[in-house]
Image (cartoon, rainbow, N blue to C red):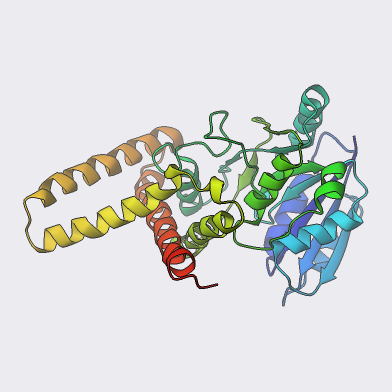
Length: 322
C-alpha cells in the first residue's frame, strides 16, 4: 500500500520542520508527503524543500481558504492508495505507517482515526493540555479510546481515508468549525467502514499557552452547534455536559458572593473534582508541575467548550442568526 500524507499549514514553519523531521525515520517507506501551505504570510517552502533528499515531499502554496479545503487540495494531487491527514503540530512515531499498514491489511477499513499523546519533549503546559483533552475527567477519555459513545468519528489531526472515499464523498465540504466530524458522518452515511487503530498514535502539541488553548476549545464548542445544523441527530446529551458544568460554576460563584448555604457543598464538590484531576495527572505524568497545570487545562477545556457551545446555541438555534 502506498500512502499520501497530507499536511495543511498556516504560518507555522517551525512545526512543519519538526513534523517532517519525525517522518524521516518511518520504518515503512512507501509514502509521499504533500505540504499544503494555505496562504501563509510566512511561507515554509525552503524548509520543506530542504527535506527533498530525505523524503518524497511536495510543497504547494495556495490562497487561504481554511484547513478543510487545503486538505481537499492535497487529495486532488495525491498519488496514494490511502490518504493520511496530520495537523502541522504533530510528531509522528517511527512505526506509525507500519502499524497502520498492518492493521488495514487485516481489518480493511475505508477510513480510520488514531489517538494522540504527549511526547516527553513537550513542555509542562503542553503535557497538561494533552491531559485536559484526553482525560476521563474532562472528555470522558473517549478520544483515541476503544470505548466511545455512538459512531467513532476520526479527528483530522490523525486521520486516514482510502482514495475511494475521496472519490465518492468529494472530501471536506466545511473548511472549519467541525469539518472533520461532518466529513466522518458523511463517510459513515456513504456506507464505508470506519474504525479506530489504537496503536496509530501521534504526539500532538496542540497549543503552547493556556490562552491559545482556551481560544481553540471555545472554537470547538461552537463547532458542535455547526455540526448540529448539518446533522441534528448528532447532538447528544453528553455534548451538553461542558455547558452545564460552566453554568454550574457560574451559579457557584454567585452562591459564594451571597453567602448561600449551598455554596459550601458546591465548593467541596469542585475541590474533590480538582483533587481527582491532580492525582490522576500526577500518576500519569509523574510531575507535580504538570499535575497542577492539568487542573487549569481541565477547567479551561470544560468552560471554554461550554461557553462556545452556549454562545452559538443561542445565536444560531434560539435567535436563528447565521
